[in-house]
Figure (cartoon, rainbow, N blue to C red):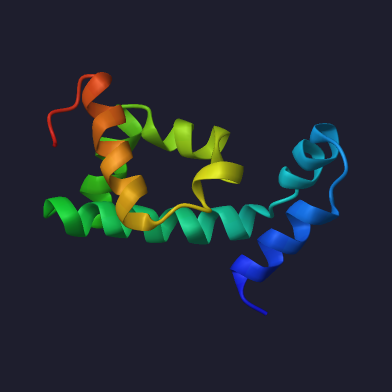
Length: 98
């Protein structure tokens, strides 16, 4: 079963926003970490940074915290789109990559 099918079936099985919010919070730390590491890698690739440099940059300009707080939504978006959005987010917080 693809992730898209799972997400769609999950969405239609929910009856109220409260249920959606509670179910959306049930991501394992391992799942969040794996996805976040891939995102950091993609960010680094886009801007010519090593994993360590990409993590430091994203951490310094509060993007890692943003990813953690909004994982339920952002992990459903494309890596390309999220990388673009994170670059803008970091820029608004003082970063200079764009």
